Amino acid sequence: MQVSGLIGNTGTFAGVDLAALVAREGTPLYAYSAPAIRERVRALRAALAGMDAGIRYAVKANGNGAILRLLAEEGAGADIVSGGEMQRALRAGIAAADIVFSGVGKTDAEIDAALAAGIGRFNVESRAELDAIQRIAAARGCTAVASVRINPDVDALTHAKISTGKAENKFGVSIAEARGWFDAKAQWPNVRLDGLHMHIGSQLLSLDPVREALARMAAFWKELAAAGHDIASIDVGGGLGVRYRDGEQAPDAFDYAALIREALHGFAGRILVEPGRWLVAEAGVLLSRVLLVKRGEARRFLVLDAAMNDLLRPSLYEAWHDIVRIGDNTGCERLAYDVVGPVCETGDTFAQNRELPRCEAGDLVAILGAGAYGASMASTYNSRPLAAEVLLDDGRYALIRRRQDFDAMIADERPADEWRSA
Ligand SMILES: *Cc1c(COP(=O)(O)O)cnc(C)c1O
Image (cartoon, rainbow, N blue to C red; front, side, top):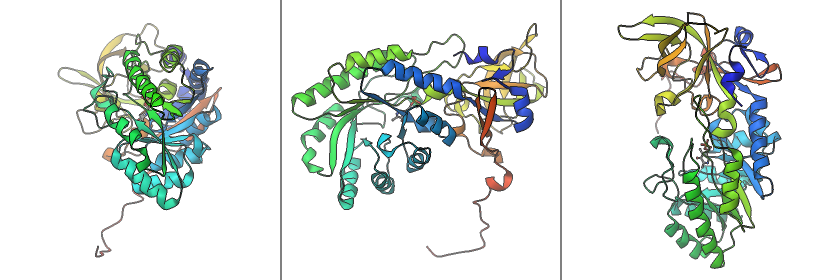
């Protein structure tokens, strides 16, 4: 699905007129296409057909309850990294058994709540965590099901801040350490350690690192099986990249599934995949109004009413997002702009020296590829309330997060007029 083409000169997205939409709901506004999300999840399911495989959507990409419900309806489970994400997944109707819990720093309270809910599996990232799960499961008188997160030590060829599968990254354990856990698994009688997990990074545009990592994990699975360990689950993680700029080529679901099929040929257990970005990124746009055009000494600034607090990726990762002006752009003069927000940081820049049709105050622009790691990373920095979110489907829309108002933004603050002793 080519979102830029969809919006283009028609100014519609999933059949909804964007100018009319923002006239009602204001800006900045996150808009997600339900058909685009369904298309992705169905494409992935079709690609995985024939394997005993389940999708565990990475909630951190976009945890809005309506998005989770949509994915749950399409048969996806959840990959969570906190107790809060577990609550979101459960409330969206995702079965506890279809939830896997990843992350390097699970608290005792989170582990206990996950056991109480009966989540499907823990992806364990350290020996200390394994000990904690054993202790808490024993206290509950239950058995936790767990996979070891392997750090396969491959270079995912992506941005350093979203690379997770090199030995120097904080994630997972070496195959040597994991081998020790399996050999000593009687030490953790309340943990059924019968799975392998990996996740080497995000926004992977090449499948070569995945092939390499899968090969290492598959060799380890075969070694464990030969040693008599029952391996019931192999979770290959997420990370599939998407197209953020025209001309970029994102991996194809069928190529990805073919890699998995080949690497895990002969595996009789359950295969799990944990895509986040690939399912939702291209289905979302951030709509924003041009506040003004400012001529600097050296540059022309397009100042939007959206900012880094709404969409952090450009500031955090120097990420590129295509930007389109909504309206009739045919025959428009094109100019180079630095597209910025109103936040008091030089890093509050969506794009530098970006060619766009000539823009004026009041124009509407769409920042594309904003469905993942957009709203979920938003903050109220500069006391800017959180943006509203809408889900679009077949010419209609639903408000799935109302715009935060000032009172809601400061609701948890208290004056320091009540002093206690700790
Ligand atoms: C973030 C994350 C994912 C999803 O990554 P995407 O790049 O959004 O697909 C999957 N698994 C784990 C463990 C993660 O931390």
